[in-house]
Amino acid sequence: MKYYIGIDLGGTNIKAGIVDENGKKFPTYSQKTCCADGVEGVAKDMAAAARGALEIAGVTLDDIVDVGIGAPGTVDGETGNIIYANNLGFYNAPLGSLVSKELGKPVRIANDANAAAYGEYIAGAGKNSKSMVMITLGTGVGGGVIIDGKMLTGFNGAGGELGHMVIKAGGRKCTCGRKGCFEAYSSANALKARAKDAMELDTESLLWKHCDGNADNMTGEIPFDAMRDGDETAREVVEEYLRYLSIGLTNIVNIFQPEILCIGGGVCHEGDALINPIIKRIAREGYSRYCENKPKLVLAELGNNAGIIGAALMK
Image (cartoon, rainbow, N blue to C red; front, side, top):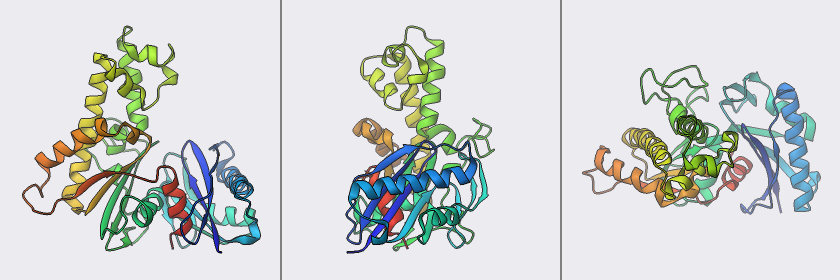
């Protein structure tokens, strides 16, 4: 049996898991992402996470063929460098070679959203489809585009950065430097920031109760929970979030017309409360609304496993 290590590098956490040649994933090892020591420190932490995953799976490093990394930002798959990752502050960072040195194994590196998309495409919500676009709602907004089984990366590895299309000219400042990006309105971090601003203006909002009186406890789920409890401020926050998310996703449908549009990330645990308003807007505004065949909007099935499985098996 052949085994691979898949590592998902996020802005908040590093997650590693062992995946066998049949796509079976063993339990995940996770630890916090700390960029204080730069790319060298992150590489050491990733190697530590990989060793933790090996121990959990009962597999040795000698059993491993190679290591796949899903990393945020623009990635050069040939050199293993992260060209630019705005949420990590990395520029031309040789992450692949550093992790390879730490583990003594060949390392492949891909954009994290591409890795997650590939995982869903081969083993999850996009299985057996010809084309799929996946959007991940996390620290940022990642995008992965697969057409006829091939990942769209652009000639320079920067393709598919759907989170950085502008949906509101002159809008909120994005970490990439532009204003009004999809990511600045539709990431989980954007939802949390908007909710925190709203609760500061409404001292009676149930958002305070759900945060135990501390705005720093805000999560992406709390605005939905408070809305369900009848809080008007939370309802306004959620409705604004869903409006901008729907605008961005309708744009994506109009551009790519994929067979499957897959949404992933922690916010997706909201299920119908998240997806139904988006389906209605796409049905109303999508350019393919008169076509017999229309893109199907689905929630990701693999959760946190998608990025690990995709990174491990993506070639």
